[in-house]
Image (cartoon, rainbow, N blue to C red; front, side, top):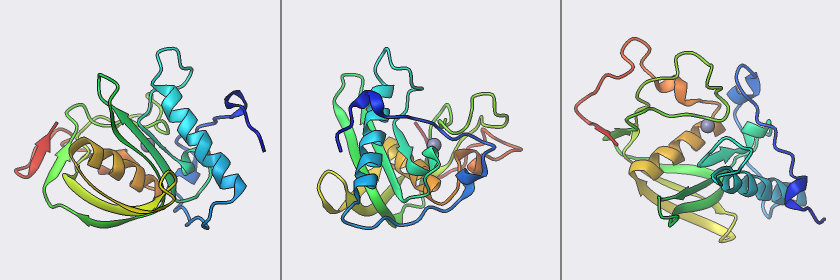
Length: 188
Ligand SMILES: [Zn+2]
């Protein structure tokens, strides 16, 4: 199969579509042609989204469920302002090995392609573990890898891991006190 980039059809599922609440399933390895195509589509989508003229809403990651496909796969691509790659991997069947008790949250809260900007109650701290260790099969390395990440990358990993469990960032916001700080919470 030969697919040009232009042929990738990207249709993002948004709330209130209930498929976003489904738990995704593990993917068979080695990847099927269909799953390889899905991986390539995710990579294209996220990397294109941060280009100035992209038609996509900017994203640092996407999970398969956001295309309506309940498979344990997500792709994360994070650059700094100088376009240095901070983190890049497409993880398949990721598992959390451990999480810190110390928490971190983005000072402006989180966003998600599946949560339309018009959706209410999406403002507030999304408290995540400051550090997380994740293991999963890397599409690029073709083997199980371990990522031990803190701060922003840890936040993005947890955001994408949540998608695989049918969770969304809005679930973590304290509805009564959305911007309440706690002692072990680090704001970045
Ligand atoms: Zn999301």
